[in-house]
Amino acid sequence: MNQLMVLNKLILSDMLKGFLYFWFMLLGFLLLGYTIAWFTNGTTIILFVWPIFLVWLCANSFQLTKNNLEYALKLGATRSQFFFSSLIILLAAILIGQCLHRLYLVILPAISSVFSLENVTLVGFQELLPELTFIHGIGYDITFAVLLAGLFYLFGTVRFRYGMMPLYVALAVMGLLLLIPLVREASMKWFTQLYDGKFLESFFLLALIGVVTFSASHPLLKRMTLR
Image (tube, rainbow, N blue to C red; front, side):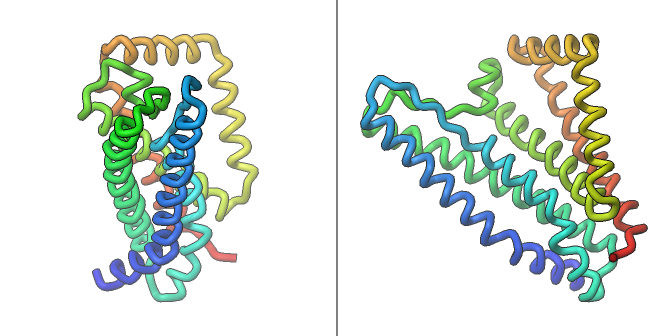
């Protein structure tokens, strides 16, 4: 347990500054968007919060193994301990990020209301899928974050062990799947059903994919030989 705490502090020290810097920078860009809206009254300004956080999450999930595994092993940690520490840190980042996201969704519209800025739109799942409730919106945010974190953590682990070639193959296969008419039509039908408020809970199944892909990193880490 003590070793796990040391690992958590190690990874946190690497990510915390970037995490806080990201949210402050994002707030600055969002306020800049509101300032532009103030001076360009009548022009619709569309702003994103959670989608931009997901970009940060993907990048850090991808780099986590490369940036921390070797040092963690030198400290005497096992690969399993590193895996579980990574899981804890990424889940904490997702949950804290979601809290900050919801805080921004309260503060920014309040600022917009004070200055009568009706031409600013914050876009998230609830704007794309109007039938979502508040709880569904939070669930969708977290579900998609878990999916991407698990997927990119696996990608980062594969790249660290095997290089980029397996990732190119995986991306090519995913691209080819989207070209299959049956897959494309099924995806469009599913999104249309979500938009119409049908089978909303089916989206949460994506979290299982995130759990599976993240778990798939564990055996890779256990067999990994550092160069």
